[in-house]
Length: 135
Image (tube, rainbow, N blue to C red; front, side, top):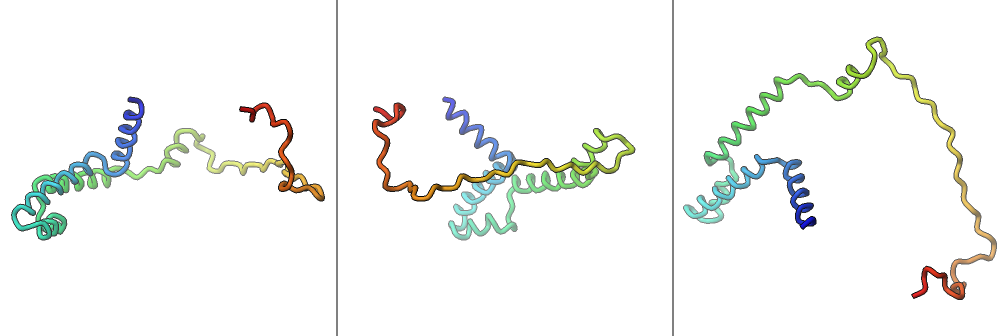
């Protein structure tokens, strides 16, 4: 049950990121158009008529109007970048520059040199085997 819920939520998230409900409605419209046009003139010609843009259905026209309206609403809204919004909310009015952060001296990590004559191959495992590996 939890796996189905996770799968449903992932698919719902992907749907929202890709195109949302309008994307699903467009796919439904194309599917209906493909079935209708294919029944009238055959599959190849029906597919061509579906995707050429010259033969839209009522649902396609409604989706196009919705997209156009959303684009106009987006143009009307002022373009405020998140940085300007945050800086206007949290930075005092007279401050225009932030100080350059100081670099912290990090310790240099070295490596342990390999001893002469030591090899990872050719050694037998420890006897008896470690407790964690016993069956």
